[in-house]
Amino acid sequence: KENAYSFSNDFMSEYAARNISHTDFILSGFSGSREWKQLLFIPFFLLFVMSVTANSMIIFIILSHRALHSPMYLLICVMAFVDLVIAISFVPNMLLNLLFNWNHISLMGCLVQMFCIHFFTSVQTTVLLWMALDRFYAICTPLHYNEHMRFSAFLKFVIIPMLRNAVFISAIVGLARSLSYCQSNEIKHCFCEHMALVTLACGPIYVNSVVGLCGVFFISTADILLIALSYVRIFVSLFKSGRSSQKAFSTCITHIIVMFVGLIMALTSFLSYRIKNDMSSNSHMAISTMYLLVPTCLNPIIYGIRTKEIRQQVIKAIGSKCGQINKASSDTSRKK
Image (tube, rainbow, N blue to C red; front, side):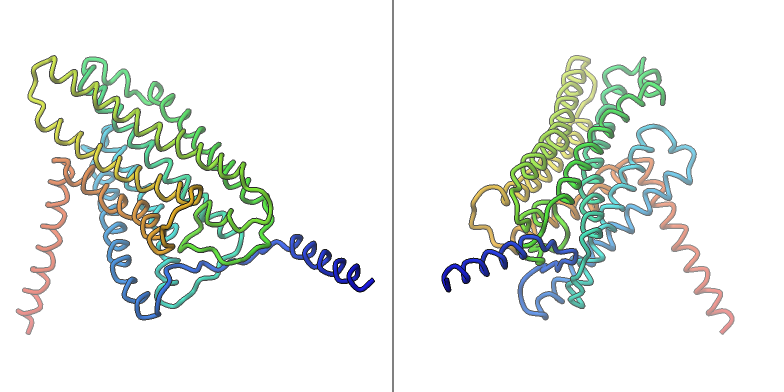
């Protein structure tokens, strides 16, 4: 009787535990001493300030100059906006965690952050695909460029990829929402990454894992492969025509290298949850953070400031600001 009673109690306690779903979570973040975390705050804060400043400047310059309202520059503006949203969606919470150990987040807040990060990251590669199409039409079919880049014609390249992104990301977040989280409420990450949350579920997560991996391959990987293919077509067109292709070649190679490095980091982060490995939690978090944050800092330089027209406007804006500061300081010294 005692054994039966003990077994019944154990079964009931386990059953009760499995029916408790956490609604509040702790983002454990980087492990280490408080001093180490506060030191780690500095580089991430500088990257965040750089990202927000550079992307805001690109958006302001393109929107405020009508000469830059062509499809290529508007796509760069959209890219800057997407990068800005990605940085704002997770970096402030991570910085507060590092500096003040503010690490609590609700389940709904976690799901919202997850959707913002994954959706706008998918839009990031899709915008790069649109930019590659713009360059393809401009170089390979210049006589029909305006026809291809009309808003009504280009809309088909916007609607289909965006629907694909929205469906996959909504499915990923919806499946994560349907799970019960009874194992632990500690997310071993500095933001709500999909698999970091899902691994805390007490039920099977095979479907979540497969859908998440399909999202990576059918969105980011597919877009980058299409971008690489368009660049190959551009190279072939330039070589056949005999036009000077050194600048286009170096630009395209730079874009391809940056995209493939980002893709490798993203796949490393996603696959580390699904394949047994010896990667430490800090290393995994560093890779996940870098593949999100570093592109938001580099994209304004690679796609924005390296463009001659945008660079000229940036130099003018900085020169004008410096002139105003010098004038104000000289007026102040005269009054004294």
